[in-house]
Amino acid sequence: MPKASSKAQQRAAGAALSAKRGETKVGDLKGASKDMYDSMSEDELEEMASTDRSDLPETAEKD
Image (cartoon, rainbow, N blue to C red; front, side):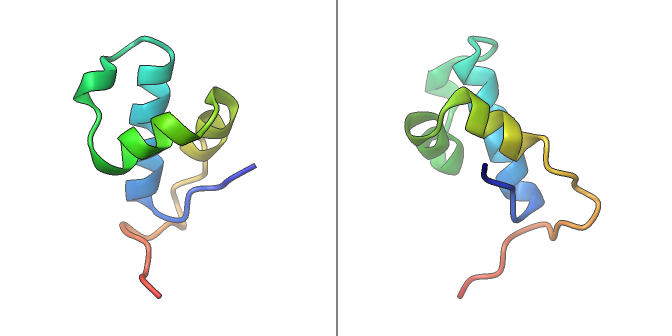
């Protein structure tokens, strides 16, 4: 299962998960959260959104 590599990625997964569950509108999603909604299952999103934030950077480093 995927783990978030940054706090920003974790927030995007949380937004996508909320839309997947019908708690927010899919049309409100943008960028990474929209891509995640389209490409990941609810279980995958839940795993990523529940990653422990304490050691995560704000954003992921680019290679």
